[in-house]
Structures are given as C-alpha cells and as structure tokens.
Length: 114
Image (cartoon, rainbow, N blue to C red):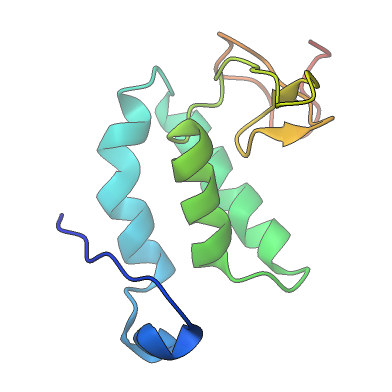
C-alpha cells in the first residue's frame, strides 16, 4: 500500500471525501496487526473498540491511524515512558492508560489488571 506525505495547513490536504473508508484501511492493516502476535480475536476487538470510541465524536480513521502509528495494533505492546518519565501504555501509548505487555487474547469487556 503506497502512502502520500502531506504537510502544511489543512488546505494542503485532500478532502475527507477522497480518503479511503475505515473498513478498507482496517483490512489493509490486518496482516501487520497479526504479525505483532495479535490473534484474530484481538484484531476483531480493536475493530469493535474503534467503532465504540468513534461514537464519542472522533472519526474512526483518525482513531485507527493513531493506534497503528503508536503500537502497530499490538494489544500486547510494551509500556515506554514519555519525556517526563511517565508510563504511556496501551494501543495508543497514552499516559495513564492500562497496558498489558506481552499479553494477547484478553477479554474486551474487562481485561485483568497489569
């Protein structure tokens, strides 16, 4: 899958109507998520979580692209520290987010504490 680099003001970017839809972007990235050790169930849970989070008003494609940028969709991604030495965990590598390094196939409803 090829990418085009855009930068500058919003007027330099193509209109959202020309972007690939969420399902296409997700499906194009499935193989990469599975290479991290994610199971098919983990990938399905990411799909569900993105759709649920988008109900709060953030575009599905934006949420998913942040996940892919920060963790490659790896539900068991490690927990690094930010520049203030605070742990940043989870799929979006966010401060104070729960993380489950090295773990896969956890329940979407209530994963066990780290």
